[in-house]
Length: 437
Image (cartoon, rainbow, N blue to C red):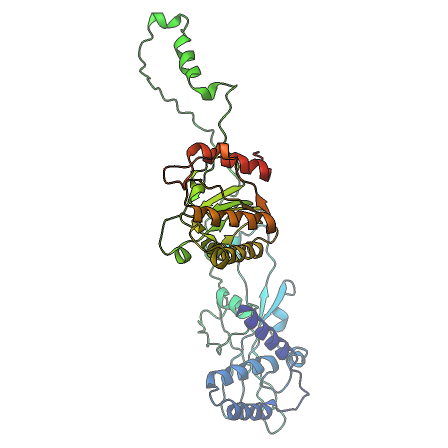
């Protein structure tokens, strides 16, 4: 907003400086035409704006129809008192325009202010500015030549503040200038009212030296016994330190252990079971995987789903959220399919699960663990599991069975014992070539 205002003020000053008319041309008629055009196209144009514009043009050109530069070069009328003016000093023109219309007359007053050069012997507070006012009245008419000019003495006294305000340079005001009141005093001399400002000594004073404040404090301490000056026995301290194994430089912290994740037992296995894969080695299967011991493989993830068969694993794998690129997948399942018909049910579910594994983990090395089962199971169930192992070993990548000498089950003839679970885990790690860091 300030930049736009400065732009308009600069453009207005340039337009006023470029107003130069030929002698004898009446600019007021053209101004009236411009005012009528502006009021016709701008209905809300206020009267103050028109008066302001007329005042600016009058100040730039003058009411006598001559440009400002032409009037400044006109010779001054002879004044008998002009010889009494002091020739030395700085001649500074201060112009005050007052226009009044009296039967088509325009009085134009020009004032010349003479400021004598300052002297060293006279103090600044008593210096005065002598102002000799020469008033020239020019009576002009719009019809013909002007009558002879008769100088009339008109003494007008202004204060220094009004003189500086009239000579201040700045952007033209947005509103028409208000008439300034003129105080008439003694016509022989103009006194300049100056305010006596207190003289401030600008000489820097030397900084006072900083004060040093001494504070006496009394500290109360317990008296030191005489026997404390002897040597301190560090035997008790040493025993307490070495009891903590963290101070033993030869102590090696135990590596972190990882265990299997046992999912909830539910009757809605296809809907409730989910899985998130965050490690590059995956071991997935039934409830026997939850019996595997804790291990030191940070890249191995074990998920146990109690009562799961191949159909359940297919649903879990299809919904799994995979966060890393899986490199190895081992599936240990099939024991819960022992009561199904192999050809009609188990085989189809197995093939569907293998296809889901290949789609979900396309870059992984896959293996299906052959089922270890107890010989105490019913003969029909043993035959189904035997057919399952034969099909896997013939058509799919597989992991061989644990030797029968190391395989034992609980009383339910289904779940592994603790030793069997540990032996099975070591057997799989050796075949999969899993190595702890």
